[in-house]
Length: 233
Image (cartoon, rainbow, N blue to C red):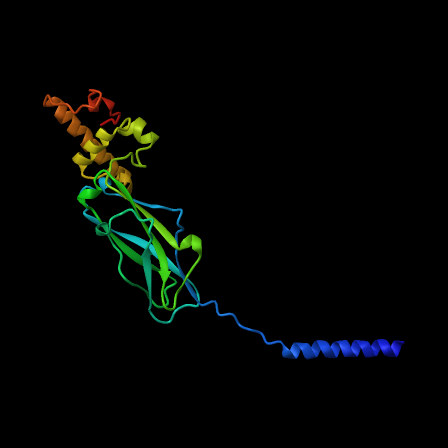
């Protein structure tokens, strides 16, 4: 019985080793995948109303490659999705882009133009990653970007509770429109605190000048706009 057991074990070992010889390990080449660094849920917003002196913007869309690093420049493209509501004359998307060699992250640029027909409107430009001959499309969540384009007045994010209680007072479309007209800027969040204060004082002094000239700037309800500005100075 002991002899039989040893024989069986020897046979099983032989079968196992024989099977191993027939197994070949296949290497998986992940290739190269290209995707946006941001995902489709993070909408990019651009309002020309905030930039009255600007006629066009170049929107940067960072892209990254995963997998095998490239030793040469590779071409890829972006596709305008059917969900786009912006007219084609409003934007320029190059036919092809170049992913520069050895760079894990590069940038695609899209040009957005300010056109009269955009006034008072909001439209969408939806772009899909289309990849290239040697670049496959990456993760689905990172394969699309949505750009919201407008030229209509709306309360900016920087006009928060502190701004309302300490500097410019309660937000109204008319006050914001007048502020932009006076200082020439709608997005003051990009400036230093000192620069912001200078711009707000410039606005207040303009309202004082208009009041002293007997032509005060009034809100839609007839209130003197100057009386709603808590800024001291």
